Image (tube, rainbow, N blue to C red):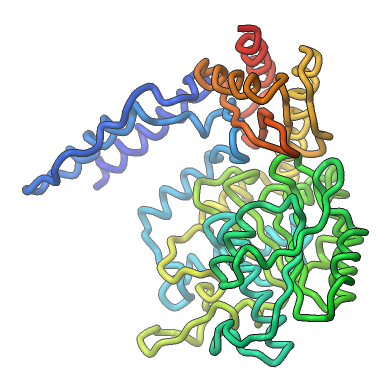
Length: 447
């Protein structure tokens, strides 16, 4: 086991060391497939075959010039902690079967709430991603608004339940709709609110929509960090409007909630503490390995009531049941990597990471605008939208940049137009990486 894990760790470290100069796209095809062998294979041979089969198809997504999606890399301490978590193989269910995983989640959760401006009394569940965080937050919202209307949704389901209103921005993230489907509401339930020119919710239209129907159990989804523009909703204005209508305010803060940790960006999340639930990713701006995210609920008893389960065989059901804060029971101990990342960075390091990525996004926008291309959004965080003319030409430039391999950006459709979407989220990205990437985009566009 010692030699096997040393070899795995060495290969992982060699891969990480190659990232600054490694082309972003996969170099070849994966070598998996074929019939399942009848006989056992020695573990060292399995590791060798795995590396050989996977290596040609590995993307340099953890590297400093991957600007697709909104994902970072993985900090050194977080990477090492995650490897330990695999080796320790602890069950993060409750503090009887997993005292260390529960303790580290409690400690890291307290740090997260401090950084993100969330009340210390809120509960925190360690989930897989923004999808899981939104689902947990909206499950808590569903429980609360229906219980207030005299309905036990966990016992009786939604058939025959009081009608629930779900109000969200026209610029909401797609995971919100999938969460509503999973929770039995269906995506068509959403009453849309207009967004402003940069994609933040129009608070006057929010008030109009909420006033437009008879009172009913109401859930409103707000966001910090529009997936295309980085725009953040005016929470200080919007949440009191929601509460005046007796509604539950959930904040989808997958990446934008991290603005609260940076003094120069904190104004973008002003009022965040007023919300009822929040979702935030760790494998985005905190730069921890996949899969890592957080669901916070202002009322811990509501959080647990919406998700808890009981069974005679679940030993220690009276202890701290961190499994009651997620939709999973058999969970790996995600808290070790989160704790390690926060310990490595500290409060100042998290702030510097967020501020630096925002500055680098602005550098991208300035460089591409100076080259004659259209930057469509107000760059308030780490997102940049760039047009190269007609939609077909923009897509051709994106494809050419991806083939070139210097950097990697994806495409998106926003307000009916096609754009290159650049997201700067990696702790390892430097000004030199941005300048090199801008030059590559200009070179590809000129072809």
